Structure formats: C-alpha cells, structure tokens
Length: 216
Image (cartoon, rainbow, N blue to C red; front, side):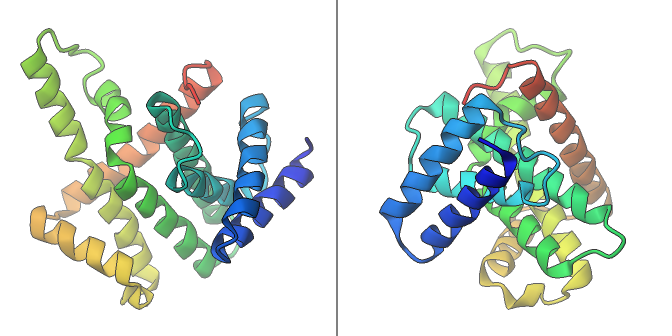
C-alpha cells in the first residue's frame, strides 16, 4: 500500500464513522490496521499523520481489537501520530489554528479515554532506575504515574486556550478542564512538567516502536 492509498482509506474511515456508517467504517479501519502492521510509519512525514492517529481512536472505540496488550500498543501509536501532527503544525510558517485545535482535542480524548494504557510507559519513564521490588511499591508507582495523566490533558487544553480563550465553547474540553481543576492544583510548574512529559513520552514511544517493542 502506498502512502497516498493509506491517506485515502483513513479519510474514508473517518467520514464513514462521522456519518454513522459503521460497517463501511470498520472495513476501512481493518485495512488501516493491516497497513500499520506492515509499516507503522508509512504516513510519518505526511500532512495526514494526525488523521491516522484519529482513525486509531475510532478503531479503539469500536473495539476492533479485543486484545488488551495490542490495544495498549495502538494507543501509543495514536499518541505518536497525534503528537507528530502537532509538531508538524508548529513548524509551519503559519499555524492553522483550527487544525491545531482538532489535533490537541483528539490527544486530550485519547489521554482521557485510555489513561490506564499510558501507565506502563510513564512508569518506565519515571522509575527507570527504581524498579519496584514488591507489590506495594509497584502499585504506588502506578498510582503516581496515573496521576500525571490529567495534568498532561490539561496542558493541551491550556495550549488550546491561548488561541481560543473560551475553548470554542467545546463542551467536552470545558467539562474536562473543570473536572481536572477541581481534582488537582494547577500550577505553572505542573504545566511545565506536563509539557516536558509529553516530549519525553513521544521520544520514549518512538524509540520503542523503532526497536519493535510495541505490540499491536
């Protein structure tokens, strides 16, 4: 499959999904999944890389893959593709604010919907030199890693807010932001940590993918 063919399939899948044509959508998503298994980086340099990430979110919500380990791998792929899309937009001479809004919102959706699936990776990052030697320590580490996810979500919402002070009246983003602010104290230090964590998680996941350590 060429990158042009995959781009076309991705856009079809998203259109079918948006229009409620589940059967047709599933057919396209299965083609995407097959392509990912052969070459996960086929659209890496494409302007449609973030749309590929969005199609994986759709794949996960429709339960096309029922294996938990593979679902975790797909979540990491979606995170990589959405993050790459954000990077590409940031490097453009003029940022498309609507496109950036869409990608960041999709990344918040991914982080919020599948927060448990990021815990292993965050635990590897935070405790690389502190391997848990007992169950209690292991559980404490996982709890600490999970607590960073809302702050990572909020950092994307904060970035959206710089361009859209009312978050475009988006109900999902407003509700998510309000909930996080009720549960966590948001400080500039927390935001800096979350933004740094996004960069580290991106590099960490990309390296794992290149080493063949992500199962999907």
